[in-house]
Image (tube, rainbow, N blue to C red; front, side, top):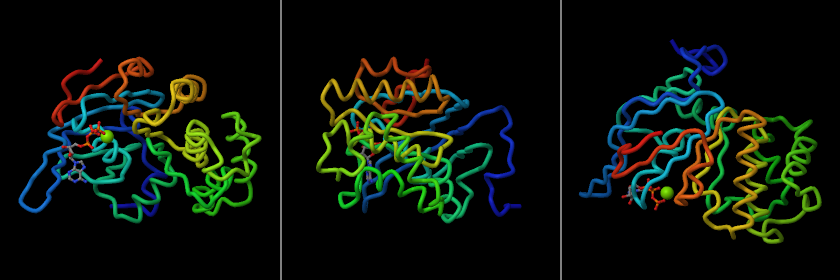
Length: 238
Ligand SMILES: Nc1ncnc2c1ncn2[C@@H]1O[C@H](COP(=O)(O)OP(=O)(O)OP(=O)(O)O)[C@@H](O)[C@H]1O
Ligand SMILES: [Mg+2]
């Protein structure tokens, strides 16, 4: 039986926020099949900071997309907060994406026509949380030291500043899990270090659960868990 709001009344068995069992994902392009994930299992507890690494094409982004409900596996199961998300209808998956998950991408993905504060408010407005969201957006932007750039358009911000806006936007609905796909790849070293420090602090001081994909060896020490993918399989875990 599926309840109206499947996330509201389920208690996870062992406190796992994310429980992935043996997922596979093959992309099909005409005759060609690309097996991007070949049997991956993960268990993440609340407050974990998982770093996913591996070569180009090893399946990192594909894995993040499965966990973040941006795509679905061909087989295997994914439970988030005890809910089997592979069994949910698209409308419920969309609700979970907006309500429970936050995303930060390499290329920032801000809306060019909206100011910094409007970009941050947007996910809250989609949940009709309009009354307090401007104040909350202002607070979040202040936490990433952008209180003076609230009304800047993305093109009036540096790359590092744009990524900080994207982080604030990912936090506006107070998500259960934050997903970041190579969040520092387009940044200079100083901005990259600032963005990483924000992630560390979100995890350590605020208890956010984070899954971050990175190429950079020196970034693999950021989390408390590390997973290396190769050809769609976990080849190393610590
Ligand atoms: N939408 C798609 N359609 C077809 N093939 C895809 C698609 N997305 C990814 N692939 C293929 O699946 C494999 C895994 O891709 P994925 O993007 O997950 O790798 P990645 O580890 O994130 O690589 P990178 O480090 O370059 O970002 C690659 O061989 C890629 O070419
Ligand atoms: Mg990728």
